Length: 428
Image 1 (tube, rainbow, N blue to C red):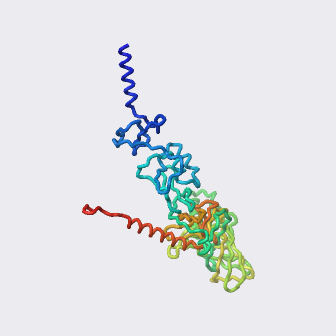
Image 2 (tube, rainbow, N blue to C red; image 1 turned 90 degrees about the horizontal axis):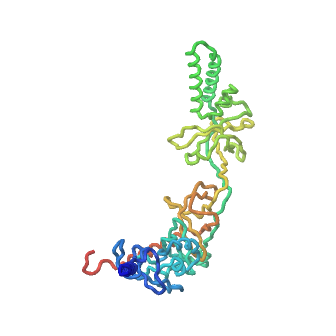
Image 3 (tube, helix red, strand yellow; image 1 turned 120 degrees about the horizontal axis):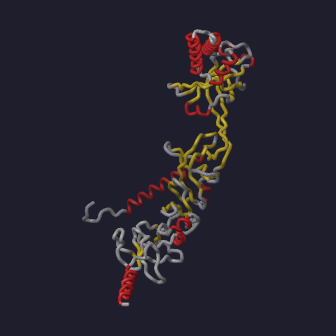
């Protein structure tokens, strides 16, 4: 009996001195202490953290009502459930966010002020970046968000700021190029050589001399490679091998036949040009008149001096109007398909980045860096950074950008002015 009493006394002593583990609270009305560096560790009495040896801090209960202006809170110290609750924190006051995250770390260095200015951005490790609106609520900031500023709707109207939504549009781009009408007797001669090599290979196919058969085959292969280097596609070479007739339009076509236009396509647009695409051409000699052709081949080698690619276009020549060495202008219509598009007037190109300003409502304007694809007329294809339905500033955005830079400079000056520097008599 005496041994049982001693064991019960020791067990009670262990229970009295054991920490509370990872729980946040003790019994009703009991004080709970936690480690500022390791909030998951709590204890019912003061002492040291067994992980980092810091003094435990008394945990205060979260106030049920909204916090007063100028009071501090920390939105990141909640339990795991706080992250799920934070995903719906749209249009909440800072005090409400604090309550949802069950924040009690009043002395943490990562505290955020409740008295936030409109347009000011705060960072919450639980749910990310938030921006305050003119009504004092918090809205989630988008990824890669830059500076924000407040311009009242009345002032926006006064200085001519307009907005437009980002939508999916059918985009088409026109590739413009210049070139000339040129006959290509060299290609015509190479086609004849290829046909002769094929005929010779056929004639020696049943020859008992293996060397002769091999030589005939190598000559045909060499002519085939030469045609490819001159810009003929594999399909065109196969068609020539089948019909065994060179294109006389390359040499000297008769009246009303076809001619060849050689166009120079710049390197940054060559990815848009495909064999078989229709081409519209115009010549200075025939103002207002359009000639029509089709891209027959694309030279596989880029010109290193002009950074252009030569494209050969087969053009109908009614009446023999197009003459050799005549200059022409060409337009190639390229269908880009259905894309998410932003008005080109909304994009500010700094040379390094492309920036737009989003209207978040209530006068709040948010800077955002985006990536764009190809420009098609008055629109850019959106590669990243914007979604369908986002509202962007389309005019007056340079004024907004100047105002944003001025605000950032003023804030930086204010921060430098409020820095007290080293204490008097102390080391800098």
